[in-house]
Length: 300
Ligand SMILES: [Zn+2]
Ligand SMILES: [Zn+2]
Image 1 (cartoon, rainbow, N blue to C red):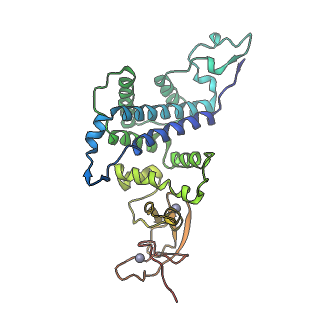
Image 2: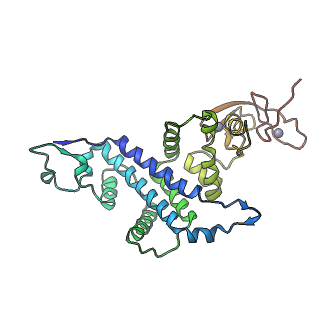
Image 3: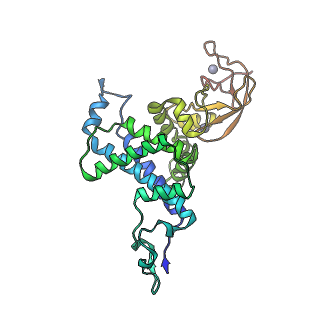
């Protein structure tokens, strides 16, 4: 008998951890839009020097994908992940731990994933995956042929999130993982919840609103408004950053519902002209703030 078999949730947890780490490696070393003491940072040069960080990021992204595929196959049976013939598992006479057995290689997992109909992979996505696999192999073999850039990793990230994970799914998993962290909320849970805004900011800076929106399953190309919750909590003690990723849903001139892609909450809004002279906004939240310029409205 094969014992201690993994569940799909185990692979999902690993997959999302690798995914977050892959991104964090870039965000924590990226100073793209910052000037350090008036010195303009040439990030392209910095990243050429720090190829090791990008290699690790790419490897983690690959591991994340591999675990996602394992998770899907595991939903049918974890035994399908095993590489050896069943008679060689050695579980017939005594019990054997799942972790002592060999698991299929990535190519086999991918073939199985497709043959079992667990996900469709277009030719375009397949060629991106092939490129990722080649680069990852180069890293493992210590013979990297090209210079890897954050843009390359983010482009692959986009393809994976839209075409393999599926729009929005990764975002829900990412937030769940961050919000369940034992240290989460020790300082201020509302603030920390809103702080995932910085991930969206980061994606927008590399992929633009359109592609970031596609990854989230929402149209970020339409006009963006401040989220009354996220923006408030992010800046209530000191200014951290704008959280302006809320959109009208439906996107009509009389629409009174605003949906925030960061916190996934819908907010009721009033449609009336902002009182600031130089603001053309007409979306006001129930707390009486214009969600275009965030100024407080005075109705007395
Ligand atoms: Zn929000
Ligand atoms: Zn305004």
